[in-house]
Image 1: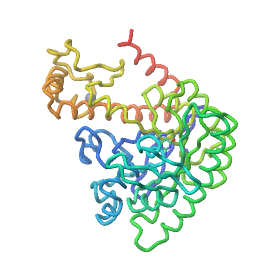
Image 2 (image 1 turned 180 degrees about the horizontal axis):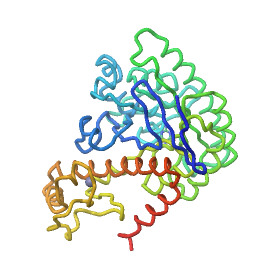
Image 3 (image 1 turned 90 degrees about the vertical axis):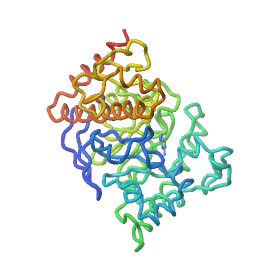
Image 4 (image 1 turned 30 degrees about the vertical axis):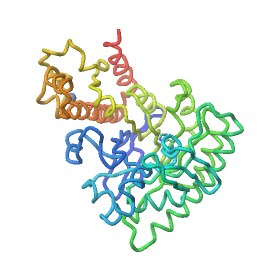
Length: 377
Ligand code: GUN
Ligand code: ZN
């Protein structure tokens, strides 16, 4: 159940109740693709970085350790000892981006595993069954994410098929939720809007999926090669056609600036690998922009990554020490950078929520974006 608490222009401040607790939005979901946040970050660590929701992947967990195994271990929450909401992506996107030699048919997608090459099939029903085994809080619909460069005719054909797949997802999810041995009988389903950068296809699709009365609505197929301006344009076109009293989710986005622009255009949920991936490379976020801790100028720097930051890295360690760890190839160096970056993202979301509560999001956004430019000049 989503409660719209406040608006500022199109920006939404909301609250989303789930069986695993209430999510305050706008929110960033911390990415744990294979049921682990890359960079040796544990479920316990999530408490110190203001995490609200974790995102795991159907495709990866189906291949390894196998959703049957997770089911036999009591579902994803028990398996990874997590009592917070978990969203699972459907596998659609990963089949298209990772799998080799995929063939898309009406029934689903035939592909080869990126781990050992063996032949696999996934369609809407398989994706729902896997996600039901995992028992996530929120399951995503099985979709096709067409290339940003695909032509109008292909995208129209693809989106029509994605709509038919969504009808099959909903039917299968309803059936699975009513079975006696389901891990999470309250599992929710979010639909995904597609249509590349074609306004007419995006809007028509938004209208069709809105009628299906799902638990939430994602905007997919973005951050896949189009420009930032094209992405913002799509959001301006599509979000007005999605229900305001349901959560909206911009999949796979993005930089802190992209998130601020997304919130302004009405998005509640975000997820991105940037903070963890950048952290593993020693690139850390600050209010003044990104720093590369491998840079020689940090060798004798006794300041924390960011003065005043309350993350587990900044409360205790210096830039100089973390730089040394990274240089020495110690895992702790990566870990501290990832913890800082995730805290930075989750803390920015908290500041965004506070700004919306106080009716000064526009001013907060401008001040924050101006701040990010300092190190770039
Ligand atoms: N993650 C980022 N973009 C997408 C998308 O378009 N579909 C799905 N399922 N996941 C995504
Ligand atoms: Zn920090």
